[in-house]
Image 1 (cartoon, rainbow, N blue to C red):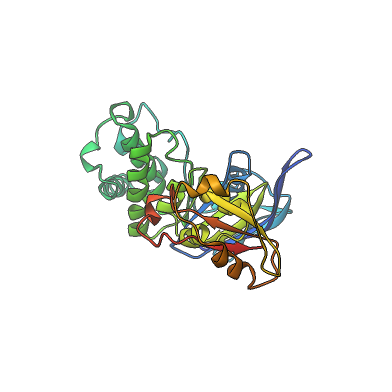
Image 2 (tube, one colour):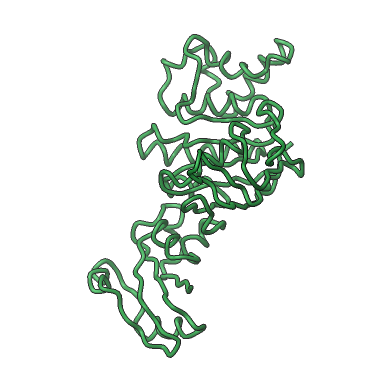
Length: 308
């Protein structure tokens, strides 16, 4: 059964170094979420806390309403109903593909475990690779075997730690779409950690942009790109052009405005001024269409504004 995820005011630190600072987000059953941010922002630590590999120092984590982590409670990883796909896949080289997939099914009868492994290989499109070994497979095929192994025990929640980082960019984009289709077909709740926005936008239903251990914005890919709430979000998910503004409508163009004009059309000063005058505002930002993820390229190319 797919789990709901509720993270409330999560805190974690390594010694005196605070890595996660009051982070909160929620994910409904069957949805795919993503923690997206630059290296060192704390996203993998959050994933490890969800898995039960790290104790929390504040706040709590609840799966389907059951608290599994808080300051005085730590449910062991094996009792959380969680599957994990690691960055390096962690396949056993001495086991066949089928045996790798069936590894977590030791409590099942052998015939049922074999049938479940075969069903998972069918799901990920590797039924013909039943008796092969990991070293005989491509990187993309190994990634799908790792996914099949994680899904075999029917986890309530699947965690993916940068599962495409070892693949070339073309294969990464194709596999991210395939993995999304597999997860949706299985009906599994999943959380992905990555620093690659293209990967996040093509796979996830909801994305949290992380900066210094906090979530700047938790939203859909479309809203993150077209309606960023902070300048950090706008800069991280696209190329932004910022300008200063005052409540009376005056606009002070940023130094890079002239250079950015060569890369595509932007609103006229009057259009920007009218947007900035809607509320007393300090700054506004436009996000350009060039360089946006392929998953959004067919949508409106009109720049978006945010105020703060």
